[in-house]
Length: 124
Image (cartoon, rainbow, N blue to C red; front, side, top):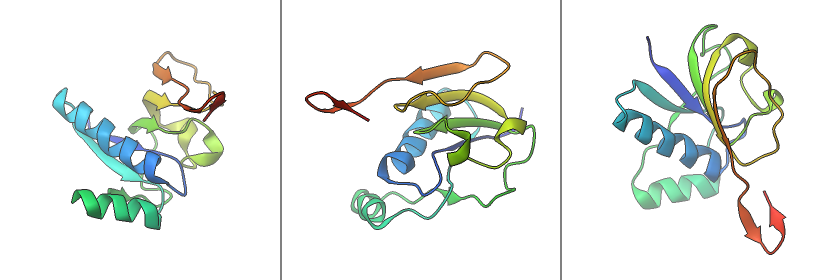
């Protein structure tokens, strides 16, 4: 079993980047060979947060960097349109998200979708 790549959606924001870093930390502590990645350059807010905390930004992936058959964990997204172009050709091990479910697989996987309450009745 090779490395597992963990990434959020394209045009990553702070929750997408930090989710990949936190998930990579957890998976590493569970003894898995993982790498936190990003599907784009972090925005200014995210750069500020990372700099403030003294944390390096994850490696930025280009289209084609994740080979067919690779193991991946998706965070902060599950919409194929917001992900890598070959999402249907990789092995999705887990999804941790807070958005509406947009993805289906032909196999069972760990899937946690928990809405985040931000204001009285608004969820994201």
